[in-house]
Length: 378
Ligand SMILES: Cc1cc2nc3c(=O)[nH]c(=O)nc-3n(C[C@H](O)[C@H](O)[C@H](O)COP(=O)(O)OP(=O)(O)OC[C@H]3O[C@@H](n4cnc5c(N)ncnc54)[C@H](O)[C@@H]3O)c2cc1C
Image 1 (cartoon, rainbow, N blue to C red):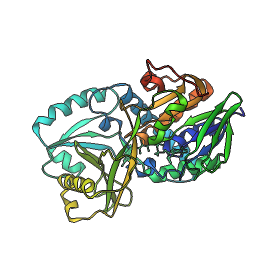
Image 2: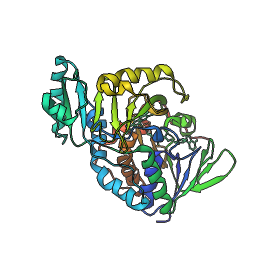
Image 3: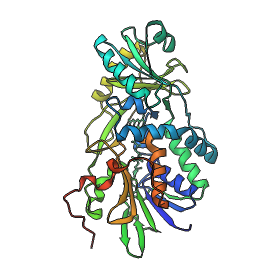
Image 4: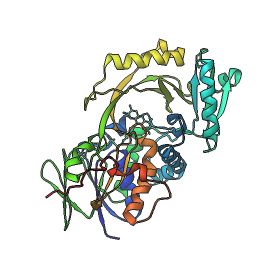
């Protein structure tokens, strides 16, 4: 094949695209501003929950998420085999808990349509609910149980992806600072803040919450902005919480060694990743209402990351119309860990010219630019 692919951004999306391109035989260079997985991807709770995250109706985004969950077992095995690293891929199932009779009809509606898409959802109450999740608050009257949802340990998943890519021969350059692409008829160059030059034939832009900065250069509107997520974790006994538990206000998910991760706020704070007292206090109040035993605990970890949100809530995945050597894959907002395999497969298909069987128009990078004239940089 011989084509050289340069990927900007070493988060879960950039590294997944790198892994897929390497598996297809491309030569891959990843250029990361700071540290691989050091931004949103390393901050994530790692839930693979297309049903619990999409409660309204089955739109194109839900289908994308559902397809990615379907791809996960094989995908994660390939990453594990290539990296030799484990990242706690766990099929725990999830419970979406409600507190009022009035919420039951919405839950039943969801169960109906989501079961058409393989959720295997069941409404659980009383003794059945307590057997599934013994320490759940008695105030929870019912839950939608979805046995097919899973989770990973996100920071370890990103490390495994990085290791797998290196083993496949990727060149990964970290601490590149604010790197910039240059598109010329002869080829593509990415120039680091310190002046290093990386050359390639194709460019994949996976710069997460920072992607808006390419608008002028690429001549399309890229309405991606950071939404800060503050999140915390308690130390508990392993398996004290058995499922991912969602409520209308947040979620709790227990990792293998008993670390109970609880998230997450949604704040507009620009590119500030600091943790605030107010943000964490709101989480703690809700955690007590879901699992009363946590009121006796203090979080042992608190952190924050910047989700790459978009104007319509959908990611941008596709070629740049005016220069098809460039592929954009950004704006995965709350679901980038879940969406990593499907994004990589779509991008892999774009590299090789193989059409996806999914409907991708809703994710076209130029969809915010209708009426604007694409302008090529001089
Ligand atoms: C608190 C929290 C909880 C979450 N929980 C979940 C969850 O349970 N499940 C789920 O699926 N998703 C979850 N998410 C969302 C998920 O983390 C994101 O959707 C995903 O990480 C986005 O991946 P990314 O690679 O696009 O972005 P990032 O991980 O932010 O990576 C982008 C990278 O690009 C680099 N970069 C930027 N500019 C440049 C440049 N000019 N040159 C080179 N590199 C550059 C950055 O340094 C960064 O490393 C959560 C997010 C947060 C914050």
